[in-house]
Length: 296
Image (cartoon, rainbow, N blue to C red; front, side, top):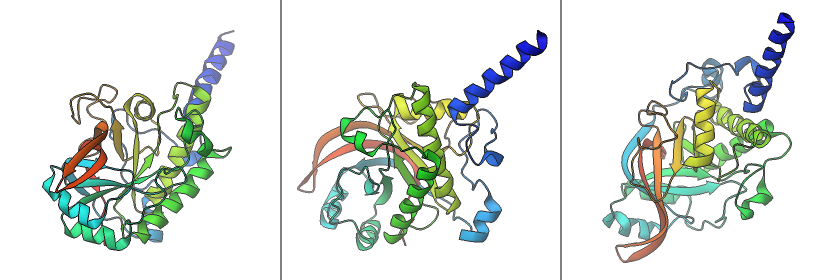
């Protein structure tokens, strides 16, 4: 009977790990990190990654205000917006779930121009969405039956597109995962496998895997996974919580030691119109202390 009770406990614990995605492929590198440690920023297998892709440069970080908008503004508008309090801009550079697919201004030339104007860039990739995503307009791009493989494939696409825009290794690439029902265990497991596969491949290719989501769903899920010791989590988190005072270390779902230092962005307001330099944009407002793109 004692052996049977122990056996049931082991099986039960294994089931919990399975739901969290801890046993996902490749299992040889899915072990836990030290509890309470910040998200990993190095390659899962640094030696092989360096041999294949070269050493990743040290991240460039920025501390201050940022805005993001669905369609990248023209270089002239960006020049005029130097009159604003913002010095970093989020751009949606790829992904099958991206709302503004037409990006007439976004190019390698645009990236270099705004960099020379003094802007820092935050690249956002809207890939496949959680199987339990809330937004109706995202349900047609949900994760499929092979989440790890799909995450890896989309990560390769993200890196390819980032390189085409002149973003070099060492740049963060933020996976945009809209709010989802992360307490649904089956959905949470599928989503986590996709995110981890995406993170590992982005990191393997020399870039920093970032993650954008609502604080109350996706980011809460990542933090719960971090506390459980899950590997291959994002190196940087961009959490959305609107209608509160902006701050990087006040978010209740995150421990203060998580994703610190210089690994956080807080989106504190959304869909607001602002006018600077004679140009009006519909934007989201952010406060950040985190890596930004390295533009060649």
